[in-house]
Structures are given as structure tokens and as C-alpha cells.
Length: 76
Image: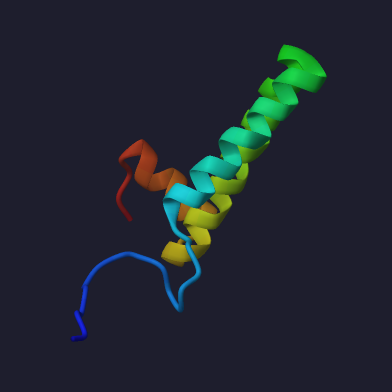
């Protein structure tokens, strides 16, 4: 019997999605904090946030100016 599941999940048997990305980010922050101290933890966290923002903008097809205008509540 074949069961069809709609929604997020592994594609082709390979796990993916936000859970894996979150786990990888947590491990990177943990290693940075353990081996590099609190300063490295902050740097890795800031760079990870910038990377997330860039990926989010690319996924939405939004330019940086449009995003900042939206954030400030400006309309064109």
C-alpha cells in the first residue's frame, strides 16, 4: 500500500528543510563558542544572520532597497 503525504519532508529520501539548516547553524555557533570564545560566537551569529537575510531576499526575488522600504513602512 502506498501512502501519499502532502507537505514538507524529505525529497528523494534526503532530509532537508529548516530543521537541518537550524541544526547546522546551532552546531556552527556551538563550535565557534567552544573553540573561539564569545567573540567568535557573535561573529558567526552575525554572519549567519546576514547569510539568512541574503537567502531570504533571493528566494522572494526582492531587492535590498525594496526590503528596507518595506521594513520602514514606506510605499512607492
